[in-house]
Length: 193
Image 1 (cartoon, rainbow, N blue to C red):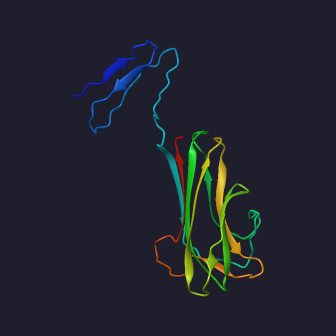
Image 2 (cartoon, one colour):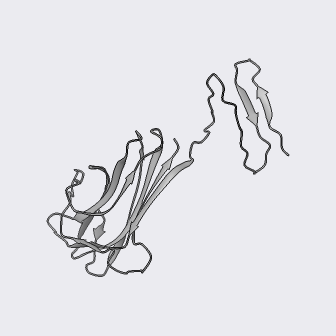
Image 3 (spheres, rainbow, N blue to C red):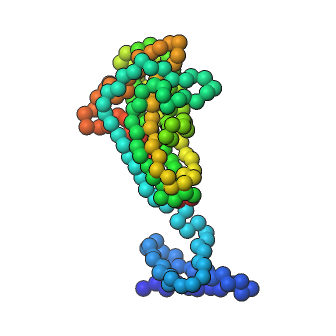
């Protein structure tokens, strides 16, 4: 059995330090619930995964709709929705990390716009250039971080569309089709801040 040492500061500031033995075994410290305030310092709990949400789909989606391709953000009314996920953060001061990937094709050489939305606000967008047509396609990834800000429920969605002017027909999840393996996924991680 291991012991935990308790050391107080020389100045008597009321700070107590707990030092665990140098082993790799997890330990649980149970503190009594009593009057007063207890503060944990040194990053206790910071970086811990609070929750994860994962949505995937393998349905082929085709659109000829365009999305903003300029210095302005795409709008929720543009393009076609690929997938969505409702999410309620557990803590307002946590950090949210988003990882989206898909595989798509275009009917002509053009930029295809992919946008991540929080409710109706675009929070991330990319526009890879499709330099081939037909069966040749591109894997696309969006990685994004933002503060949760509140514990209100919100919906995250990803939409896609073509570059105005080139007007391509855009498709996701069409080729190659690896049966049983989702081609489009969105993962949301909530990490303690």
